[in-house]
Image (cartoon, rainbow, N blue to C red; front, side, top):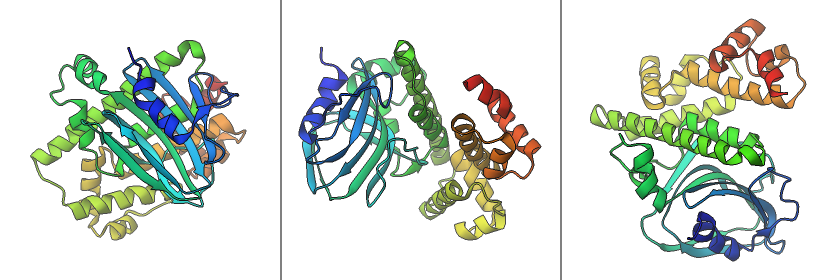
Amino acid sequence: MKTILDEYYQPFFDMLGLFPAKNADRLKDCGLLYQLNPDIGDGYYWLYPIENRYSVAIYSLKFKTDFLIRYENKQCLMIGNYVFPKTEQTFRTDFMPTQSIFGYASKQEDVFQMKINRGTVVNSIVICFSQEFNREFFPKKFPGISSNLFTILSGIDENEIIPEITEVLRQICLFRPAKEIAKTYYESKIMEVLCFLIQWYKRQSLLSDHEEIPTSDKDHLKEIAAYLDQHFTDSIPLDSLAKIACMSQNKLTALFKKTYGSTITEYVQSLRVNRSKDMLLNSDWSVGAIANEVGYKLHSSFSEVFKNSTGLTPNKFRKNAL
């Protein structure tokens, strides 16, 4: 029986000139690592396939020549995060996901074609599901869900913002599980993504069943979320956000919670906590300095928010990770 690697990835790898890397453990302690043909560019493509059900891929590719991607696109389902296509970016080996999520659902085989310009950098993390998983395993895992995975993923607009899924993708990028626990870890994270995806879909369905938010308001809300992603360490008055969104303050707060499932304050707190987690794990900064860096003037306020979010104080979180 063909695996998800044989069915979905190998034709793409052959076309792109990706080949197994010699130092396969430099990115993760498990999975498969490929590198780009040096005649085409630089970069890596890391993949963790699980049978013929699903896979996790993280890649960062920089093209040093114009290149035409063209291959037979198998029936597949994907959800992920990407920074693409832009030129004059920095090639990263440790990029973090942005807030925007994309979904892709294909029922029929077709030919995928895209021209990549010289200097383009593609940074992405993607979870891929096979049609077999959609048909056989998804209904068993989530028997109470009437919609299938194809329908749910088809409902994701380009650059959709689902903060909970972004957080799981961020965790996958950061964590290096040992080989012995890798399968359990990645399957648990994939199940988390599916749970948050179903929750998002049900929330969107409720919105559709009641009052539909106008497209112009949805676009303004995405602008607000993007603005908060960039400025969450600052103190941002609600009236300033309302001006950006071209809404009253009451309308903005109501529609934001209706769309994202959290208040603006909760959204900002989540971004601050996620940034502080990275700093606690990857720097020797004091908790007070980290608190100031992510936007809190008082150490005590930061510690309270952090504990409410994680169940641990910042010092305990850092100690447990050592």
